Length: 82
Ligand SMILES: [Zn+2]
Image 1: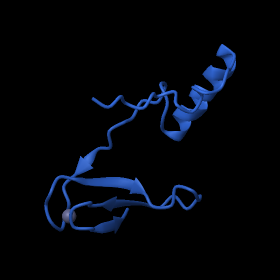
Image 2: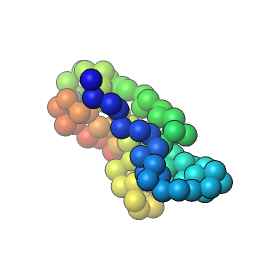
Image 3: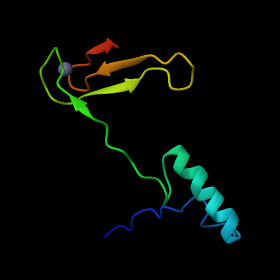
């Protein structure tokens, strides 16, 4: 059986002090991985177009300050700005 990638893969090859390792774990968590990262399941909604319950609210431009959020359906590709 294949071994799962270690969650601390980004620092496994470095010899770090526990303080630095903790800092890296915190940074990794803010980027969406590492042992401290707690994924939050997105709330799903019913798509108004295909009626499947997999639509999610997501930010369209997370790298900008535009704050455009939209309902996006992964099944039919429906997108509706909120
Ligand atoms: Zn849909």
